[in-house]
Length: 82
Image 1 (cartoon, rainbow, N blue to C red):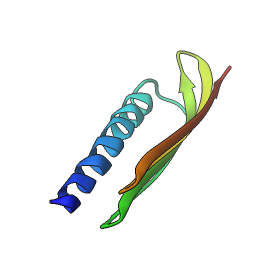
Image 2 (image 1 turned 30 degrees about the horizontal axis):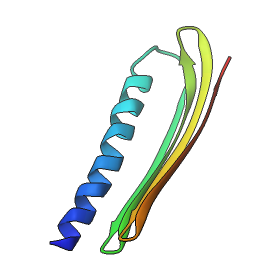
Image 3 (image 1 turned 45 degrees about the vertical axis):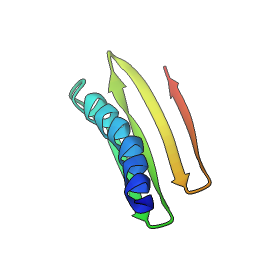
Protein backbone atom coordinates (compact mmCIF):
# COMPACT_ATOMS: atom_id res chain seq x y z
CA UNK A 1 0.00 0.00 0.00
CA UNK A 2 2.81 2.38 0.84
CA UNK A 3 4.53 1.88 -2.52
CA UNK A 4 1.28 2.59 -4.36
CA UNK A 5 1.08 5.96 -2.59
CA UNK A 6 4.66 6.76 -3.59
CA UNK A 7 3.97 5.95 -7.24
CA UNK A 8 0.84 8.11 -7.09
CA UNK A 9 2.93 11.02 -5.78
CA UNK A 10 5.53 10.57 -8.53
CA UNK A 11 2.74 10.46 -11.14
CA UNK A 12 1.25 13.63 -9.70
CA UNK A 13 4.64 15.34 -9.97
CA UNK A 14 5.53 14.15 -13.46
CA UNK A 15 2.19 14.67 -15.24
CA UNK A 16 2.01 18.51 -14.97
CA UNK A 17 5.61 18.88 -16.16
CA UNK A 18 5.02 16.64 -19.15
CA UNK A 19 1.87 18.55 -20.07
CA UNK A 20 3.65 21.92 -19.69
CA UNK A 21 6.54 20.72 -21.81
CA UNK A 22 4.21 19.53 -24.56
CA UNK A 23 2.44 22.90 -24.55
CA UNK A 24 5.70 24.82 -24.83
CA UNK A 25 7.05 22.54 -27.54
CA UNK A 26 3.91 22.93 -29.64
CA UNK A 27 3.56 26.68 -29.09
CA UNK A 28 5.54 27.91 -32.07
CA UNK A 29 7.88 26.43 -34.65
CA UNK A 30 11.52 27.37 -34.35
CA UNK A 31 14.65 26.45 -32.46
CA UNK A 32 14.13 24.91 -29.06
CA UNK A 33 15.63 22.55 -26.52
CA UNK A 34 14.06 20.15 -24.06
CA UNK A 35 15.50 17.59 -21.67
CA UNK A 36 13.79 15.64 -18.91
CA UNK A 37 14.90 13.06 -16.36
CA UNK A 38 12.48 10.98 -14.30
CA UNK A 39 13.08 8.23 -11.76
CA UNK A 40 11.04 6.23 -9.28
CA UNK A 41 12.09 3.69 -6.69
CA UNK A 42 10.48 2.18 -3.61
CA UNK A 43 12.03 5.07 -1.65
CA UNK A 44 10.45 7.87 -3.72
CA UNK A 45 10.71 9.61 -7.03
CA UNK A 46 12.13 12.64 -8.78
CA UNK A 47 11.70 14.52 -11.99
CA UNK A 48 13.58 17.37 -13.65
CA UNK A 49 13.05 19.29 -16.86
CA UNK A 50 14.99 21.92 -18.79
CA UNK A 51 13.27 23.79 -21.63
CA UNK A 52 14.25 26.72 -23.83
CA UNK A 53 13.03 28.21 -27.05
CA UNK A 54 10.71 30.88 -28.39
CA UNK A 55 7.06 31.58 -27.60
CA UNK A 56 5.10 34.54 -28.95
CA UNK A 57 8.32 35.95 -30.42
CA UNK A 58 10.14 35.94 -27.08
CA UNK A 59 12.95 33.68 -25.89
CA UNK A 60 12.37 31.65 -22.71
CA UNK A 61 14.26 29.30 -20.40
CA UNK A 62 12.79 27.06 -17.67
CA UNK A 63 14.50 24.61 -15.35
CA UNK A 64 12.42 22.75 -12.74
CA UNK A 65 12.81 19.76 -10.47
CA UNK A 66 10.63 17.93 -7.94
CA UNK A 67 11.42 15.14 -5.49
CA UNK A 68 9.14 13.09 -3.25
CA UNK A 69 10.15 10.62 -0.53
CA UNK A 70 8.43 8.93 2.37
CA UNK A 71 9.36 11.87 4.61
CA UNK A 72 8.22 14.71 2.35
CA UNK A 73 8.46 16.47 -0.99
CA UNK A 74 10.33 19.41 -2.42
CA UNK A 75 10.43 21.33 -5.68
CA UNK A 76 12.14 24.31 -7.27
CA UNK A 77 12.07 26.18 -10.55
CA UNK A 78 14.02 28.88 -12.34
CA UNK A 79 12.85 30.68 -15.44
CA UNK A 80 13.48 33.71 -17.61
CA UNK A 81 12.18 35.31 -20.79
CA UNK A 82 13.08 38.23 -22.99
